[in-house]
Image (tube, rainbow, N blue to C red):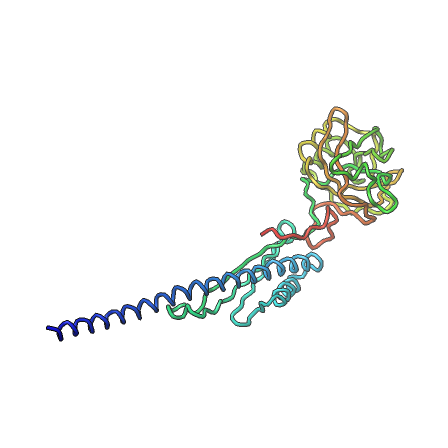
Length: 311
């Protein structure tokens, strides 16, 4: 009887050893997956940083060069500087470019994570993928070009807007007289960019986008009015289509001749007093101004330079 009990105990010990061995494998595998998962997450953060920086580099390169190959090369070069090299250790870095609305460059970084413990359960690698999209351009955020002009007197000699005209917390109400050209630093006048006789209907169509002016303004070119037009309907259109927008607005001398442009933010349109309220977001620049539907590869001096991550 005693020997029979000993045989049972030995058999139980053998079964416990088998169960323990199986459980140990499972425990090691679970702990290993947690450790490998944590390491894969850290790798993903590294890849995401590379994706972000690479997409910014690519978007900037395309804006400057318009060259898709140079864009791809720049994006991959920045990714390599951050530890992820195209084609090395199964790393894949596809770069896509879209120019339908500004320059959008999307960079993916796809790479395997080599597991230390996951192979115990047949998972030698985790595939880790990240993506980022950057936008760049000189965007015109309005429905159409803003058909009004400001005086060079609104700016100091260094091009910085005078204090009362560049304060976003206290927008200025521009519009003091009804003239062909701005008659003071706080005045404005309407324009069709010198493309013919100016009338309210045409200016209204420019504001709402149904009439697109395609022209590059020459320095010294007269772009003022010819008929002292200053109709209330135009201020209504500004309220409807341009409030809250950033616009590139031509700047003229005392005779209405083009001198350059500045980025202006429209905050409000006062129809009763015929004022357009807003402020200059950036200094005056003595550069040409091209308006129209120019593609992204053309010079686009329509707003402030943008380079930012959007995804």
